[in-house]
Image 1: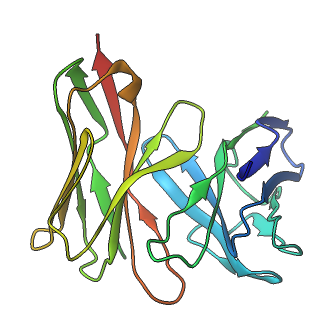
Image 2: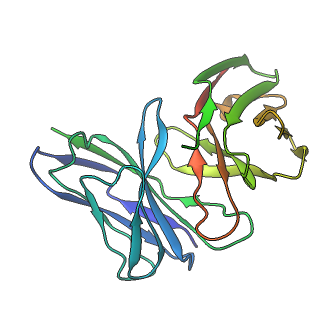
Length: 113
Length: 112
């Protein structure tokens, strides 16, 4: 059963703590992405990776970090430097297919207390 | 920078047609997409259209593209309560890294 998984579904964090969100895919996709979703603002790109051991900043990378040590995995760390981290985080992956469809995970809702 | 705009909310009665509209600014867009997001879930691709097409029909879904006006629409015929969701318009380009730009999303409410 191919797909993309994110864990946990809900995450609570105290201010000043770093937290890591997991994203795993078994679709054999080369590219992976992290988006942040806030009400009324759509999806904003945080980081993306086109290939293992390489990643690029998206539009709102400040306060976030990523790694891509394996093709299947693209974890996102929300650091204490992120000023407003409470949001819904979505991970996606895609292949270099003709229509560039992105496949999304179920999301992680992060709440900072 | 590139922008994709949608109205935030649409309410229709069950059985009616829904039309969700989108405008985009990048004239070099190659693909335009409609994604659906159900509450608390990720996005799922509904349909897409290549930029050299005017229309695409897929069962209850009809996509219309006016490239001159940079306007994309999604028509859902015989709207059902299960169609209640947020619908995102998006565009991307071919070649190299294919960044996808998403709109703000339109929340469709279907009234029984």
